[in-house]
Length: 411
Image 1 (cartoon, rainbow, N blue to C red):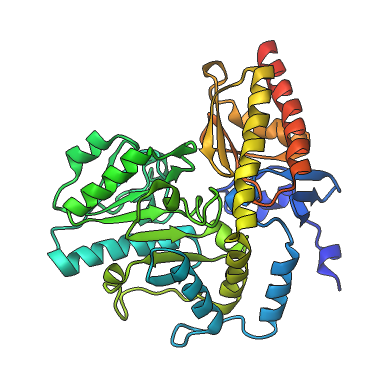
Image 2 (cartoon, helix red, strand yellow):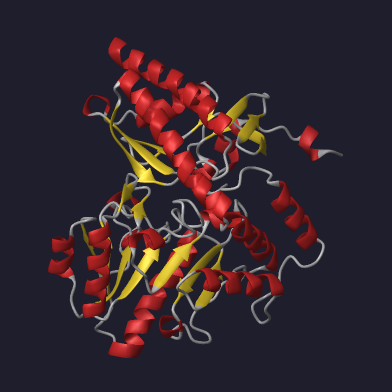
């Protein structure tokens, strides 16, 4: 019996069987290839969303499909009472390509961040005692949905109704060094920051700000933790975004694009910091499993090449030029910003809160895009999206914006 034929599902099935923490659209994608997706009805879409900055090498990438098939015939899983070759190969490549000496594998960005925040506190406990436990993060930041990560994240809405959440956490405004100076102290064990805030509105760090944050961490013996879950693995045009800031963190987290959609995350750390996660202090059943690591290794091999990384910069320019042309035509954006292929276009005041309307209209035109809060249109496509797909996607976005502008004028 073919269950695909006998058990038909629709959008209504979601409301029958799923917890209502998501509100997915009526579209049910069933197939993807490159930067194109097709739904159950056979409608084709161009993908400027990338599964929220995840499918950096496109859908059904043939190299990754082959790697997955090969590994599936060997080992799917081993517990961490053993190790495995794909995990060790991937860890070696990540340390060779970055500042890091040690790697911890997890299943997601939130879990990688959970490990990083636990490491920061344990490191301070080991070296300075229990009083040095405070973590500083930034308003509008996003670090995941566990209780610890929503507490470090700078968006109160994600904590509402889940209190009491972990304490010992302070926040200040991003790119405001004076606010940070006012709250950092010898009780601070870590400063946590995204080199470009993603969910907070696609806001890049000011280079001078980033350098001063590093200096403050050094002055107060605090670890600098970079959350590169969204900005890492080539997204900004370098393998990690910190390379463009001239700042080296002590700990870095990554996920999303690392597995191109296969669940995998990683925390990278210096040897000095990593020592504090000694035997038995932390763990993950699936973290570092051979399937995930084999796929991630192939992703790293493809992304960290001059062709792909230089291509990100070229595609960035095409997107920005295209968005500027659309803005000259429709006058809807007050600012276009971002790094590489993590791009945000902030709505003008008269269209505040309307970014979601553009997303819905874009889907009607056959384009997937994202928001970063209610006021910012966010684009995070494949790093290797063909130029003709960029042009066609922007043409579809043109139609969507025209529809939204017309509807708001009529209202």
